[in-house]
Image 1 (cartoon, one colour):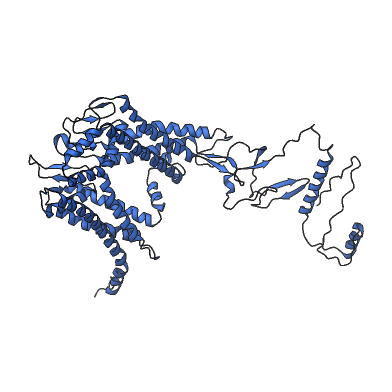
Image 2 (cartoon, helix red, strand yellow):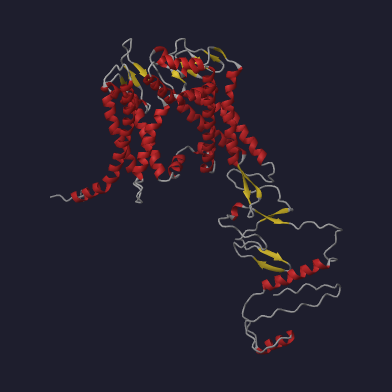
Length: 593
């Protein structure tokens, strides 16, 4: 008989664990499945409506549903294979309409967010449980759609489907769970710690959150400028080739249902065309087949292009013109905008207690340059990734490469933006810090600037921990730790004294007239005597005086006071001493021991 030291949990305990964990995982699974079903239903309704309204349908309802499932997979970035061709050889279809890509990403994001936070005031589900449930539910429905579309005219490529669909679902579900938890910074900080030490210090410096946040905002502004500039270039080209685009739209389909389908396809491919215009303005351009590059310096479009309205905006073949060269203003404007944003984060104005301008807080020039470089790197990575999605194959042989090349677009964007953003950020930082009186090191926060109106002097702030003694007249009065200097403004809530190494004390404005010494000025002498008396009152220690009755009576008679009803804790104010013989004003009181 053997006795084991480890026992398996009992069956009731296993049931309790499953019952406790199943609601969260089950809710996430149902949410993911519903999100996939909504996406498939939207594509199915659209394709079925077009199939019903088509005057010459070439397939039945089964073929239309197969096409809807294939388009749903294409919206995830998966590549399709068209089997019914004139040559009989299957040809790939890899250009993903980016507008369709937004639908499944949004559905998965909302499903993960709702699965994590039910909205009933209860606790949030564990992030891994909600994320795993949504991913499993969505991929289960996706696997059924892949199996159904495998027998259609547009079949999914297994290699691309296995990679692209789970990748999109995992990323979108992760962002949904992260949003439900309030976008915490802890996962980002853990990812930043895994970087090598040299790279982390070079790119992030001592403040990774501040620099990375500023670089991300600058990169976002640069991407917005690129997208707006690309849309402008595309619109100008479409207006210039308006007749060609209108003719292609009318001849491509005859009935209203066909033209409506062409219009929907143009709208779905409109973000792709904007990114093609961005690649054109950057210099690498885009491909219209093997050996046919369209760029601002030279264009060699393919001789046989399908009559599609968006392709009518392709420039004519031949060398570039001043109008095509003007598209280079888009990356220059993006770089200048990124430099402006980085400089705005690197140099900030500080305010005093009254709300006035007290100075500026600035990064060092190395940190500013590193922040601008990081912003350019993030912007180039985003543009390169979307450019790679905007292109792809549309067939074999000559149409195997169609659209911009991702790594070329990313490299050109990095070169253009770094050339414009880094000098702009450095120059603007130097311009905004031109009034600084002291250098600001990397990671330091120091208030520097010109004196305020009325004259001011920078006085070093004494440390409260070293028992600083502040002189007031002839008396020595110790300052308590953390107490503000006499006459200073009250310290606001949340003020950190370590961040303000200087106290700005206002000076008395100069008085017009001949300069006189304080010995000759009676008002100045009286004001000084009043200040000395107030200091004497403040330094008097309120301790109980235990004196004999005779000494107390003698003091009372000397001061001209009554002893009746006097208490031991009453301290009388000494009389003013007689004025000095050499002047008409009062003399300095003796130092009290």
